[in-house]
Image (cartoon, rainbow, N blue to C red):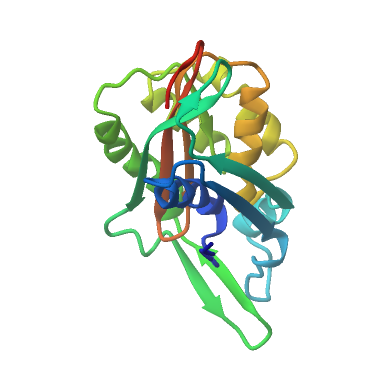
Length: 223
């Protein structure tokens, strides 16, 4: 039994947790991993005193708190309806330290961001599509960090942003849930009984990204 902690992973936490769970189960037939994500994101953005900026207003209204969990299993055979992880991927985006950064204060640890934060997800896309290498993507569960992140990622994956982004936008309507967000969007997406291959992708400070290439099994097969 082992425990892997991912403190300060923030918005990409759920994605990183799933990736590490899959990696830890390789070669462990019958093993199980519990991925738990908890986020008090609304407490972590406290800009300096003074007149509020538009960024502060938007962040203050966007961030939410949540917790979620999922069990990942290593099985010899997957049955119809099961979700199989075919591949996993992580990235630390080069030259992205000016997107988000930590702020150590006597009262707590907070974070802040600059203009690069809005551009960083788009810069990740060539790495993400390069990893996919032309593999088919029929659906996607995208981290709902904002409308631009949802639409930009889906367009980059060649998907209809209106249809494929329905569950990401529904999750965002309740607030950006940070590390729990990808788990929430994935659960909503799977409720539609999606078929074929898909991608779950999360973004976070660092600037980092994590993704899983998934396939819904339509009949008995070896795992």
